[in-house]
Length: 342
Image 1: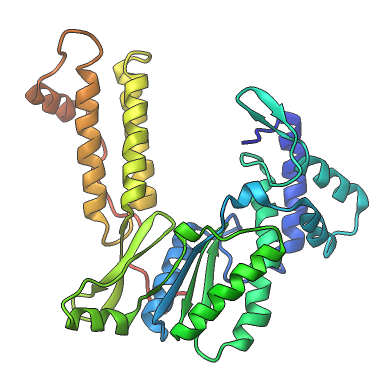
Image 2: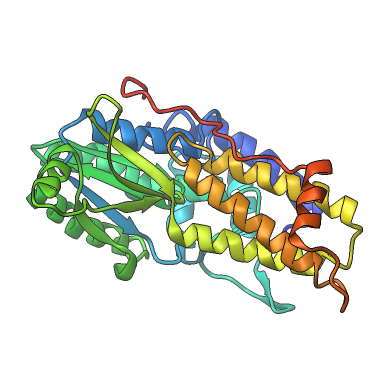
């Protein structure tokens, strides 16, 4: 992490506005992360719409290993020079890149990577991947492949939907070579090519097998059906993310129970629940929200009774507390994606 000072934040914010005005005109439609009027839910809906409406049979799910830590500064500056001609601005950006980070209270100089936590870092990452991945995909990959292929990227997390298996494998090989050229590496343990789409799911059902799944932006995508029996992409909270969120909630409740009055941290608990619902509250994921709600209440009950040696509440008393001080119930905030939506 690299947390800038107040003065640095002001300067980085000004640079960010300048670079956004320049590069927003260049960025590809497949890019969704940290861009004006685009969100992770737009990227999720785009993936689902592509798989539902296009001849997609394969999904290339690859992860760049430690992307923010391995961005090559020389390549970064070369990319910036494509559109920025002001030497003073370029020198200032170079200084931010090489400003260093604090690790365990010690200052460490950096010769690569963009410090996570900086205002400028997400935009610089977008610029880097625009040249390394997005533009290469549009100008080279699409022209070489004969079948349907489409990229959807959110920051360094991306999915490629492909029609033919041979072309999916060829793309995976080309991608490894492409990112290596720019000092990046594919995390092999997190990367795979799977059969996914209308016809692979139909084939799996005929054989009595479960269809394959993939994770993207905290959601597991799986084969499902609409009420009328048509194919659709189902989405639910990814198991890994759910466990991570519950662990974070458990640690927070454990730490806050004796430091702040109950009436104060109870309000914070409500805000945390609403924040979770706002992100994970997409159509079809009500069971995931309900599980998060139920387990959070169990954790709250557990840590309320560990504030001292004497037990504070039994379960009936805790339910009475909820009656007079209710917490937000699970709610879907994002309606079903529309196949016509782009």
